[in-house]
Length: 241
Length: 268
Image 1: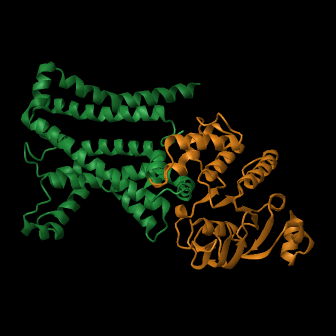
Image 2 (image 1 turned 135 degrees about the vertical axis):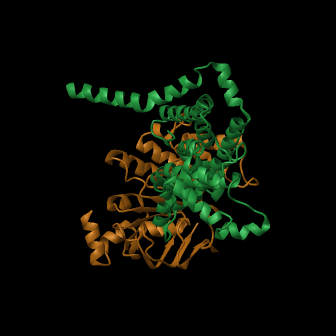
Image 3 (image 1 turned 90 degrees about the vertical axis):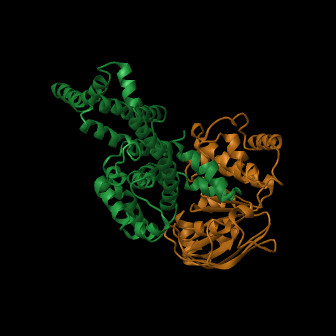
């Protein structure tokens, strides 16, 4: 799926930063990282893409379809939150199956099909046998993987990751970064990752978009950015990390 | 060590003299002449109708409170709107206002000579000195309980979970039913229990608007005072035991929730 973000604007709404006329194209199947300091608007941009925040102007086009006015649920984008946002009162299996359970009756898979899909995903994240556990009984890394599985369960058209590694210690972070990249490749889903960590963005993404004060400062592959930083800001950002 | 023992002794003594003794005396006096006399006293038609009226009032007031409390708590926790803080203060106002003043306010507004009561008068609708009046003031005095319990739980938890549910395709109602409600169930039950206890026991506000028609608009607390003033001590104490028992049931429920859910509202 190719996502075109066209001249999106969003002014300060109390909790998140501004976006000013931001445009960006996410290519089919690629892993794109949005990198920037806090307050640069990267999370706001991700929320606009997810449908949780409405932009004041601009358009979102997914494979030629205008999705600007589509609700978050209708977009069918899988999202992994910084806090993971697992449902505390549901076990792992019910968490993963949630997106399937709330589907319209006409599309909803049967109970048996849902169970099968959950097993498939548990195997994919290397957590077979954890279906009955509750989120509180899992380690940080396990929670993160369950959040991934839950997002992938709906066969998302786009995968959105909001600082998914920030709550983990360095060693686990490293391992999970590789496994997330691996999963993304296997599923082949177009992915946007938001991070403030330069090493993380450069280590995982096909292309990195560096954001500053609500707009894209520069976009390119890690090699391109390192070789030709377009501005002193990009350069300082690369050096600082 | 001395200070510790002194403090414990003080706390126990205080609880005994101020709380346990009076409640124990109610039961002792009520049953002083035997169970049969007690049963006869609470079976008096007037007392029975007071019990029924009190229970009916609670059955109307508490569900309305739950619905309103949920809506208000959610609006305050999840949305930013002008007057949000003011709304919170207004909801808590009944805690600060003396119940008797609240009763008078209702009488002035909804009574036959008040702006609302007067306007309804020609249509034969009367809001004071009947069940409607009692329910209205009970709603007023119990208004803050559910909101106060649910709001903190809702504020600290669950917004990300709700957003996750939306991105996974849940409708607003599915999100509310499957994600929000399970997270706040115990806070909600707790608030409802406190509201029930208050609705059953309210005296001041109800006494102003009830009209005190014997056998018709007397709630249990009013009936107890009436019996007592009639020098019918056995009757008064017998009716008081019923009220105390209702209160004890809510207390036990409350204790059970505190035991099984040490952090109220935590679903884990």
